[in-house]
Image (tube, rainbow, N blue to C red; front, side):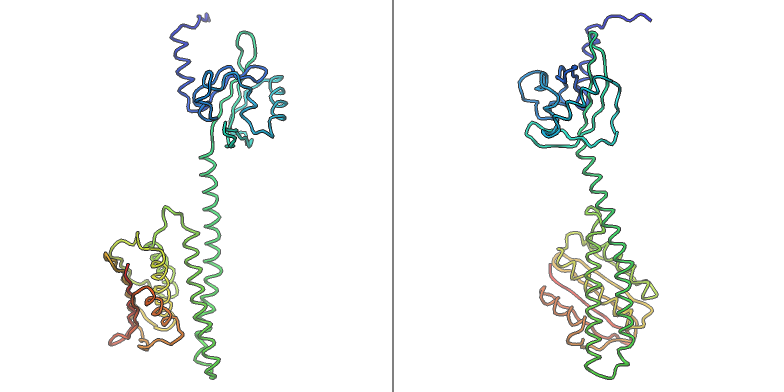
Length: 335
């Protein structure tokens, strides 16, 4: 095959390819001095506005590695020069580049030896992988959060809820009023603990971009359906996306308490849950067809606590029996 001399057009095309690469491209001589660099490399390392051809030509490549690694890098570079061979990216080496400002950033580097005028030179392709590593770290964090949330849900919450149910089942068998009240108080604290853990699970187990109050409510209702023996009818009217967190937390607390009481006390076969959002209020109504409830909550009970919390938000929470059977909880607060 006869090779022709490169034309002006070939040289122009080569220059376009060099400058058009999104990766940094460096051509280095045997002493590690940069003899050619594209604009991507100059911008990556902060030399785009420095004097010289793209700001990097004439510099030694060790200026682009962290200060503490420059000595060892000289030895590595000389070893590569003695035995030049292609080295692709993705070799699991943890490499860092040093910006002109002194800041460090993760990079991947591939090396390729070429012959120029009879001399061996090295082409280094440098890729900034900061975004990729950030995405990987975020994914690993989300996976760890999901694992923790799963363990909390399947181990901690289920055991606490079962313990509360067991305590509730023997409350009426306790003759001493003091002991009975103490057991009831412990049961209420277990309920509050379960609700607090559930809120924590929602926050740590759901990615920010998919987290919303409506999905939290739906997950709560679905999970509690296993204890009820049926799935309540859930209807959400209006958007909950911009409900403040402190109000959303109280909505979830109230719904959790209401559904828990249906499971423990009502012996119901049907329940409906309605959440309505208007311009200036948000309301929750929970109805069941169970055996009803005393119209006046216990002074230190969970329902009584919800009444006080709603009042602190400038709203109200009421619980009343329905006719001929059942219970209705109505919670409403301003936004």
